[in-house]
Length: 509
Image (cartoon, rainbow, N blue to C red; front, side):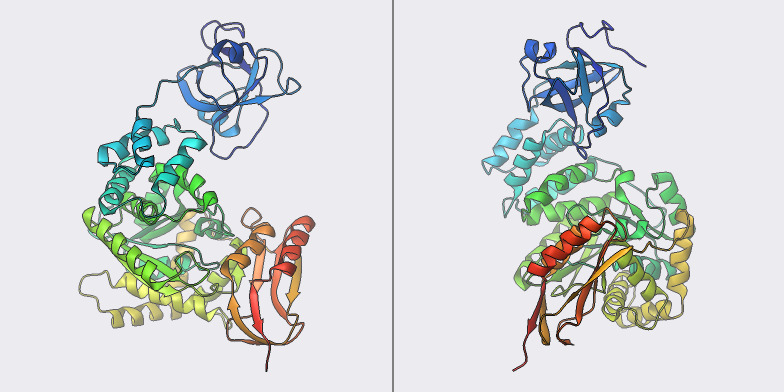
């Protein structure tokens, strides 16, 4: 155990650690008592930004003031993320001091006042973001300053380039590397797990790094994790891709565009719509993953993330322009976002839909199958001289012949082994209160019900849809079934669903 100079809690700025086990996600927090001699001597109060040093390691953390019943005289604690970052142990001595002033804050202030930030300015800001020097308030100010239309094309290009430079960048020994991404906002749209094996089975290279959900019922990595390990290192990821031509792994382990991960943590809860930030987020991770050709699915619908054709067109133009400026090729595929895809909403339920499509089961969700085939064909068209009609036929043959299934199983084995997704112990059907026709499904309400049931934290939780838009339903017939792992979450989700079913039934006339 490394100790700081003085080796006693009485030394200037020195406090002895006691672990409280407080999870703040990725935020570094140091906990001190109100009468702590360091707080009093240095003038630290709640929300102060301080430097915490343990041996040769240090980080910037936010002060939280706690009761003397939690910590004794001369003691401090750290949030779990800060504890791990410093490699701390119970009883270790830390020093708490004032941090150096952040020069990049002047650049941030200029952006708050709507001035243009050039590439070097973005580099300074993002370097401090990645080093953990920005508090949640600073990150919120940065996200707010970029919201709406406050990033023009030149700034979006500069921000994307700075994000790419701020992390690892993978290289692959082939001229063409394909990637596929969705802008999100559509529950159950888990086409990646079908597109990747089709494309890899066709002989193209597609190293797919995916995200976990933050505010949605499931991310691609959450769904894949119910089938195979996704927490691969860069070395393991390379091994899988070299062997099978593709992978589906969690991007958090490979440190691609780490600044984006930190910004998303604040951006999503704020629910700010920033076209420039979305473009920089998507492309920085794809470029960092080594992609040369990027296919982007853009669902459009009244309750999707992108809600109009005009917005989709503007977003497509910016995505393609920024990609070209950074030396890669991007193509946007605009798709129907009027209702969820497939039947399952939640990691395990979506995984079962995926496997049903890959296995060509009778009754597999037709919409998920057809969307996946359309996207796979677009990705296959990246091959030199390929024609879309031929690519559509190739994608269909690879799926129907079982080649895509065999490739998916091989990818899962290479990542650590294929497993069956779990099933929830608790279910409850939510029934129609009248007979009629389903005329609309609200993506946001459906996603919220799935989250209230425990998804994605509880992998088997979520909901299973039984109706589609345009389908006739009878009174008291099931609209969807809620799946949960805990009675409280089942009741919570069912209570919300009773008030906001998310499904609009028009009565017959």
